[in-house]
Every structure is written in C-alpha cells, then in structure tokens.
Image (cartoon, rainbow, N blue to C red; front, top):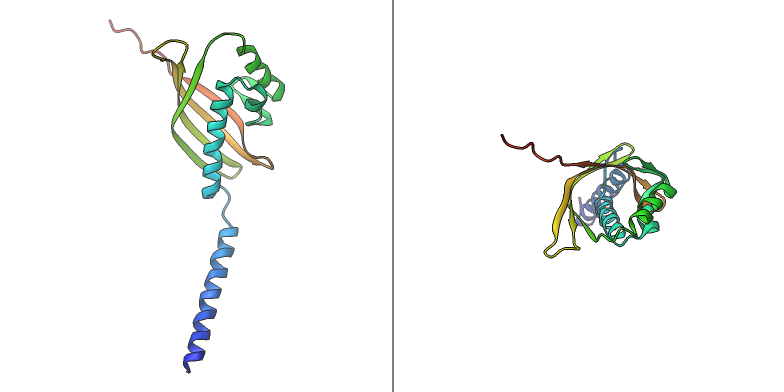
Length: 161
C-alpha cells in the first residue's frame, strides 16, 4: 500500500466515524436530555421565581403550558388570577431555589428543587417558609414549560415535651 492510499483510508475512517457519531447523537433515546435542555430548564426555574417575585402575572403564567397546573390551579386564567390576587397584599417576597435535580422522562423531564421563601419586607429578611417543588416539564414549540408543579411545604416539627 502506498502512503497516499493509507492517508485516503484513514481519512475515510475518520469521516465515517464522525458521521456515525453525529447520527447517534440525533437518535437519542426517549428520556435523554441534551446539555442545552438542562440549561433551558434551569433558566425556566429562574424565570418562574423572578416573574412571580415581580408579580408579573402574564410572565409567570407563561412558564406553564396552556393547561399547566400549579397546586390546585389549572390553566392560564387561573394562574394569572393567582398572581393578580397577590399584587395588593403588600408583601415583598423572594423565592430561592437550590439542589435542582432534573431527570429526563419519555414525556419530557421531571424536576425537584428545594424552596426557601424569604419575606424581604423586614430587615434582615426572614425565611417565611421552606419546602420543595415537584415538577413535570415538557418541551413545547416555545421551549421548556411546567406542565405540573406541586408545592410540598415543610411541616413544623412537633413541640418537644
């Protein structure tokens, strides 16, 4: 074999390997998430918190699917109404999430994240509540959205006797 033939065969092997790898990436199994999916979902969580804290009713409802559910509220109008109802209560809140866990599912993804809700109307701010969100996420033509979000508030510890 000549050097030219060896170089040609090597080039073909590299090209075939690259094509095989690219095709494998396109056929990700159901429930697989890309790096971009993880980034987009993290941004969804941030947008949820910031729109709710700013009392941006339409922005907050927009992080859900049209038929999305937050606890016992379902659909765009109910979600907007929830935020509008809170607009006049005078409270100042900041939602803080940590330990976000995202898992791919055949339908999209599930998420779980810890919640601390701070009351910022007092100085220093105090934790008003703590808990966890359990989420069902789906990828829509507008990007990732919450299909279902359930809040699990931590119960107070029983009094010691």
